Image: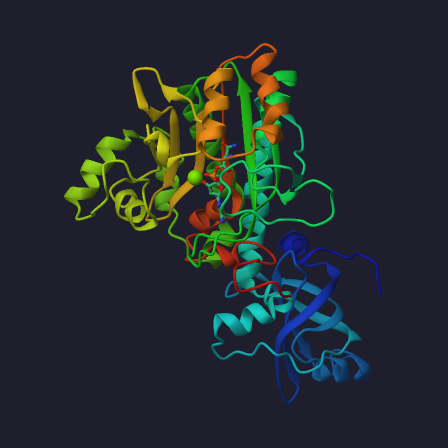
Length: 433
Ligand code: 4AD
Ligand code: MG
């Protein structure tokens, strides 16, 4: 049994042919002389109809013995079937069991999320989780593709780092090196160095935050694509982010219709966002708007998660909020010379209540000011000497940003919590499986 083997996804191209499928039986039922096997192989799903008498006695016994998630090799002729989601089913000619499964812990009844997360290694086989992970792959690839098209060079940043990037309160310390070491919060500082070497650079890897946050937007380990460009200002920075977001949305809309359908995602808001023209709003204006909407946000506060939710419901596409007060943001952000108490920064907030998916800014290029900001934030200057060298040797205006992959996936998939957007989530509550 191994000629004419196909992926289930390609079955519609083989109508009338005898093919072989290798996969798992995710569901089956049989009555008297007929059995229906629901097969999946990771590329798609198809029903195989087995009729006793049309197959050997061995195959019939095999078909009847299959329980949920048993692995199996099935041969059959592909038939058009208008009631099937893919338009085809398999008229089975032979069934061979690869391995019978033990009783599958995930049943048809409703399970709580904790239970499902304990079985995450199996839960990812379900149609919904499979769809999310495929869209994640598409987004991830689309981001890299955009970077490549725009001439960015991938320069991976280290994960073991001697210093904080975003702040000292949420670092994971690592015991091993003689010096203090942490898991990276962000690859940005290293990108600033590589962008002075290669012009436009990016990194795409895991980042770690130990904040004790329990919200639906936080993971302790998440993936972030960060980009950095020499001689780019904060406004051009926003345009790159907008173009990148549009590129990714178009890819997903072009290539993931089946997955979006499986998730029952309303694609109208995604199509609107894919038009671009993301509005830009000054932080002071956002605060004014939020107060109108009932928030008690202070003039100089960062936007809280609830503020972002309320604000983004006012727009039909992502919105950039720029010019946050300097004290609300990271030490490296350049103050606006015309408004020195505000930073040349912007967060991109996703619509439909999703909120921040990108954080970015122009960076301080002045050596003295950067040294001062590092001291003010109580960071150890020695650990940043190499970073200050970027200002000592041919400093240039430069900007960059970081996009969180899981928050982007949550938004595009239209799902509530980031924990379903990564194969094996790590949160304050969870390190297993
Ligand atoms: O806004 P953040 O903290 O910015 C930086 O790390 C900058 N150094 C990026 C840069 O300019 N190179 O993080 C950027 C994005 C956020 O907008 C969010 O999407 C995601 O990373 N993110 C998280 N995602 C999931 N869980 C967390 N705990 C996250 N923290 C940030
Ligand atoms: Mg941020």
